[in-house]
Length: 228
Image (cartoon, rainbow, N blue to C red; front, top):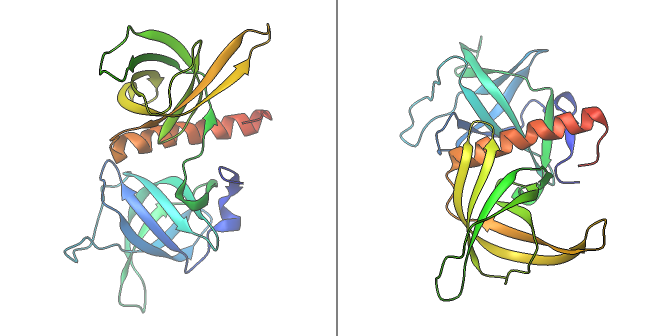
């Protein structure tokens, strides 16, 4: 199941390929796991496009994607330092081993149920921006959102969004487009609509912050036995 959290010790293995993103950098760095201890992963020192070793600052946050047979596994960690491997002609990064990794099927973003305040401004076919409306999210992912609406919204319509109270982001202002609109009923029998939108032109930095937040939400929900 995409989005499933698994124990890192059951997934991460020596020789496994891992892609890293450093801090707010959009560049991807390819590496592999060389050794594993109880607290650290030793991964081959990545090189940039110019062939220069990449050495982050101690404590720098890292976003990682580890290769699996049928999917990938993502996790967040931090850079601890570098070291030379005895008897072998290369250096390694030392990074903190995570407790858990998330199954990341076919590179798709996982939707997680969250209740965020959202302001929407629908842009109609003529380019007219309608009055803002406040609503609540149903779920959120790194590339989209589902929110509640009292009225149906046409698939393909543009919507200007303001999503409030995302940790490390604050208020996220982003343009989006409607990809689905489904009629639902609330407990009183009133008709509402779940409107799913895709984000447009989010930076990897912002995407990583959203994913990090959702990862934390998943962990808390699983610990409490809630359904995601």
